[in-house]
Length: 203
Image (tube, rainbow, N blue to C red; front, side, top):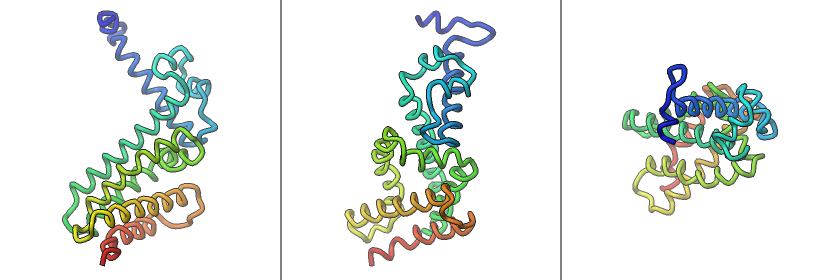
């Protein structure tokens, strides 16, 4: 089996071609989920968008739900990496760190609104993603908790972090679905104020 996977055709191995087809399917899933929402994603629609047959779909994914989760996990991982990187590279003041994190998140979620819709809107209507979104909440809350001042006890820090994740997520959801009419600059400034003033909750 390993020998077959390593055999080349047209300069690429079978493993390479499988990986490339998987990328095509994930990109097609991102496009459909990020523009039409959960109802737009079916095995047939993904294959049509990727210009691949269903045989190749099932080579990479067991079913439609596994593909949708794959798309969601990829966007969530990218969001987490962007936030971690922005904070680690930012100056030391709380406001500057908050501005770096919010700006990085906005660039990811709004410059490619498909990703924002996948991460924040799709879980509202897709039960598979709803469960996964709840499971990932502590991961994103931890990023905020680590930036909070140490004078509060651990439970207060935890509650503040969870509350801020919810507040920020709902602001971005409202912006993405069009119910919040605010410029990008106004949105960023408001989110930065929420984060940078979090320590006031513990005084």
